[in-house]
Amino acid sequence: QQPVQSPQAVILREGEDAVINCSSSKALYSVHWYRQKHGEAPVFLMILLKGGEQKGHEKISASFNEKKQQSSLYLTASQLSYSGTYFCGTPPSGNTGKLIFGQGTTLQVKP
Amino acid sequence: DTGVSQDPRHKITKRGQNVTFRCDPISEHNRLYWYRQTLGQGPEFLTYFQNEAQLEKSRLLSDRFSAERPKGSFSTLEIQRTEQGDSAMYLCASSPALAGGRDEQFFGPGTRLTVL
Image 1 (spheres, helix red, strand yellow):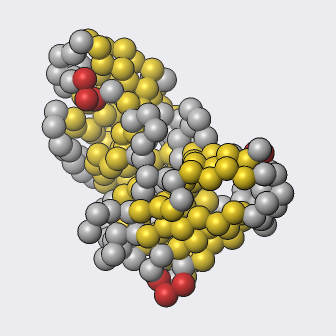
Image 2 (cartoon, chains in turn purple, brown):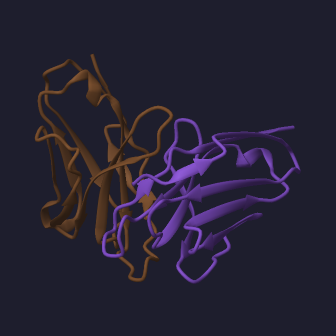
Image 3 (cartoon, rainbow over the protein chains, first blue to last red):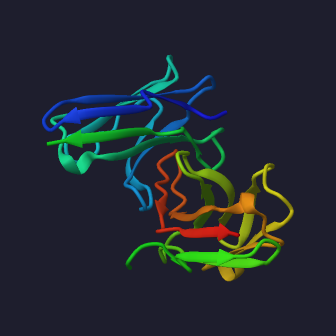
């Protein structure tokens, strides 16, 4: 079951904040966040595990709400370099390595 | 180590031809994954290996697709009798097989396949 991301697209000015959500109709075992720039490979940002929250690099952090089966990615004081498409990926069970990715959220940061 | 590498970066082929892609993972990583990505979509899981064992293969994957990882090092993905619908970016990723959900997957640059 593919996780659902919202919004589909966001346009920001430099310095503004954004939140990207990733939700699932099934239990989430962990949530992996990636950023992909046009024509490049996805770059790992962070993993969130059940029962915990893990902060990533720069001014990007995330939370994991097990009860709501949802994770949110927070981008604070956005920079031009934050532009790209953000994907969340989740394993469909607790004993597999594969990830099922959401459809992506495109973020554009303007000067 | 410079990360996951893939070869070729671009492949143009005619419908009906066979193609083979190669992936070299990060050297200490036990797991190797293949994903496919089309424009505007997230990566779609194809198959993955732990060392030389193929642990899982997508049920959506046609029998025309086969992957190998001899000796648990590099991997190859072969597509036989290519179709126009196979046109996509084929991504390889590797991970150290950490337990407890902490297994970070690192992606290679991908091979872009165009089937004419």
